[in-house]
Length: 473
Image (tube, rainbow, N blue to C red; front, side, top):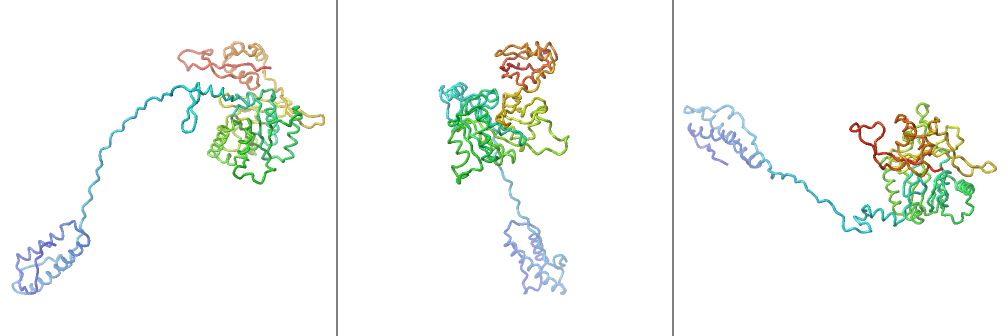
């Protein structure tokens, strides 16, 4: 461990040069860091301490003699010196230079040679436009279950307050679909229906169905494709694998399913947006297999105590605002294809129930006023279409409507404005909205582009012209 000058006990004198060399080496050893192992370093320092102490004691003994001419520094002789040896710092890691990211340009996907059958990709079908049209025509998917109200293979969420008459209204709709007869003046596509009743007693459900069939004149209902299930009459195996309402729907293959209430079968649908989305995904998967439309009946939140916090009646308020009263998250409304609201009318029309709705893509559904039909004993039988309030606020609006083309001709915004007598655009829009809500106009998809009155090139985006059609009487 380096060279040290030994101080033996037999030596009587220490020369100046030898002691200087020893002290120089000692100081160098102490103050010069070495890259050594910790265990070896401890041994080295212990040896240095011994040499220092031994050398200091020997020098002190010699200093009493006459020939002693050496003075040992106090800092060295008084106590051992120990130093901390600095370890070598690790070398920084070096990385190869990062290559510049290159943009991958992929070729535009091109379909294979056209085939009448859609292509199977990852277990699902991808349709080219012509394949889609041919597939729908070949399979025979109808446009609607109830015209202008319930599209085929759609999800409808209906809401209203308890006791308003929603259940009888939908039971009658189901009976009309099963029989293939119009529902409140609207054509239906005949098909099997299933009603899952999760609220009413079995006897009450049976009495209601009997009254509706009698009111509709459906006396021959033995072979009517109308299936009814009640929660109070469950089989012992219900709820186990292969014995759920979903399994029953797959076995029957109906065109319409009514879940009353919706949360009774998708129990977490009102818990939050994620739960609602998950439930809608399950329903759409079921629709894809069976090909049915699903109607879920829901309830509104409890009304606030203060009058100023209450939502105005459905008949006189914004439909979107009124639907916000629905229990659960907004995904329960946004995830459905059709949203229907039910309320008691406030206008003096004699109607028992008012129905308003909005359909995805198609827009607002004309307001439906439903009157109750009673037997000779005063017992309710079924609903019939009510007249509703007077749709025209002025004689000018009545004359405008009468001046429109007779059905089935269509007309555009500018045609209505011309019949209205050149009034402001806002008044024309208000008139069109009232006619649609009253069911006197049907809004068709947007097709042709043309300018509106007062349009100047470069001032605003050129709008698509809306096309309307009169409702057939």
